[in-house]
Length: 103
Length: 152
Image 1 (tube, rainbow over the protein chains, first blue to last red):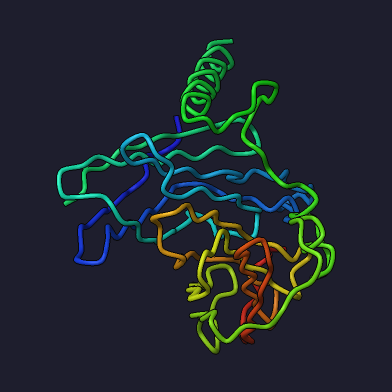
Image 2 (cartoon, helix red, strand yellow; image 1 turned 120 degrees about the horizontal axis):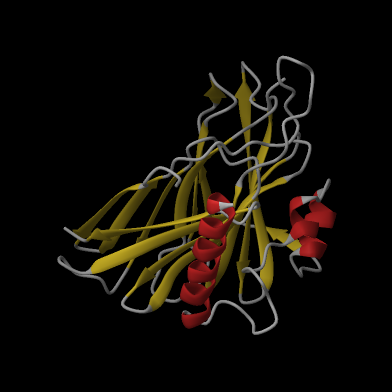
């Protein structure tokens, strides 16, 4: 089971600020290991953030997003106490969903 | 055996979650991933794969990134678009093996202002491509890299 994401969602006057730190190798598929073999690509391809049944952000990522990806954005319509969920899916079909409460 | 059964359950449950969210077309196995765009080796290829015909430079796109990145494996990049009806924001790195690093879809009610961290192989222009009103706009910023971040 992949490691949990760290999510911080803060209600501000102009919207809910969301910061997410994910745990993922984000292997490009271009790196060689110490034996000289190409390490296969293993990276997040899709990220979806939901609030109240609505997608507030969706993203498609390539392997050039850094290892242990960080993402920040802001959306309107959320308030303190609401829940958001963040889901990522990678090119091997592995996935992770974590929730956070807006504070 | 246990691992693959667990993976199957996980994949199925995320599939149901995404299907319930209306994100997965009936025939698809997983949400879309624009392979052609992520394999683009030029601005024109990326633009074509993203459904654009032409692109115009815009002063309403702000790229926040260091002038000099010490570690090319982790370069913080932010893009803020003031163009009305921004639908999506894409981050491209000119000198990376594949130009497109990330794309963010901006639904109504979400600010067209995203930040992430990307890998840069060497000093290069970072381009922010914005899709707004089904048209494409671009802004560029050069980021110098002292230690390349593509590994090897």
